Image 1: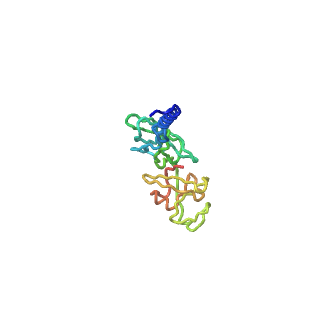
Image 2: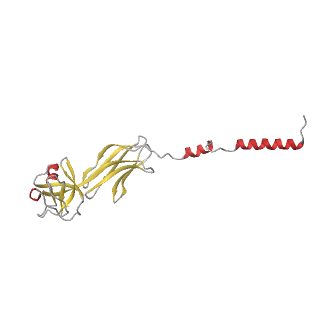
Length: 219
């Protein structure tokens, strides 16, 4: 059957439109998937720690060692005034091992973590305590039921210390041998020459402290 020239032209145009529709990219096609696959993943394994030395004296090195992904930069960070500050960094080799250290020049007690740079992946390690020596005494039984200079009622179970100038509520970390106690400043004192802190009976017992003597302090 013969077809007119007009019919042949209409048929040709229809075929061209159909082929063009088939060739157009579709949302979610291989092109879109390639772009998605090129984006970096948001998850990275947190660094592990096999060794931690976080309770040290002034001048000693705090050490953290462990493993993370190979070829990554790992940072030891300290929390201070609402922000994280870098203390040391190291780049992992083929085995993923790292070793971080920090020598503090003053007494300090801060939260620390290990973080992989370029990510939000981090492992919190607790507190790093840097101690200095201090001479202390204790008080309490004759003051039970009384109000301290900071508004605290003294009892046998109150975990607190007296200091001449530290603001009320300041947290202080004490170490005596293997015992570590963290307590707040609740009073003023001591008023004996050469003594920096007065411990309440509860802190005294927790530390295994005598009447007077040397303790290690991290502020």
